[in-house]
Image 1 (spheres, rainbow, N blue to C red):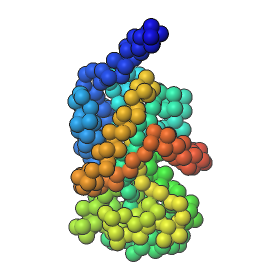
Image 2: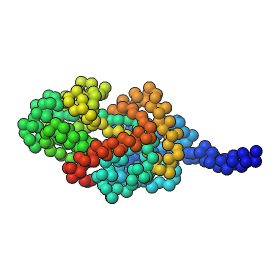
Image 3: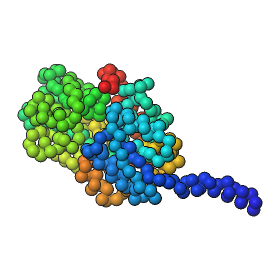
Image 4: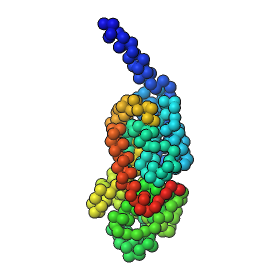
Length: 317
């Protein structure tokens, strides 16, 4: 009896600590500026966690350094109440692009909580383009080697990697033209000064609706419910091609013990019908995972894009 009482007394502080977390409001750091689908998704996630936890969860924008500033802040946080929302490049390709200059190590500094959603990308061309479908664009590029151009929002981005993977898979050479933003790309695409862009619907979906751009394909294996008229890559002969970008939630490794609880809260939220509707409104597809599945996804992306980054000599801007 005395031994049982002693064990209970020793365990009591641990139980109390587990039950008391979070003891104050949590922060979800968003390493981008306000506005856009990613920011909207992060805020929906914070609101869902607020409903599931005994403390409010506040979304805080910490942009800069191509997401590195926000990620570093969470990696080095010591308050035990800070989480990171980010997209795939922050965890999968940043270590390859930045090398020793990266101020954090994904495997060492972060505990994956769970996948939140995927954003499908599409292949857009101007309406003046003679290419009426993706095979037509590929044929055009092969007829004029090195003449066609595609736009991205920077070297090493998912749009850049996806465009290069498409070029390699199709056996075509085309030129990369980096811009600062999708908003800057749009006028040049409409005017026909660019031949294509692979991106999400946020900027270019409205251009398709207005008749100022044409969508040739979904840059994902299957067709997307967002633009069902656009064929998926599998039916166009590009098996295993995936040009979507994913978003996930991460904790600093010091909070690894809380990951199962947070993952369960995410799964409960993602199972709600209104969540699917809310995410669809911002161009997102719900995509849950276990922490281990998210960790495996990061490694798979690094293995998929790493050789391409090295072959092309891509470095961080």
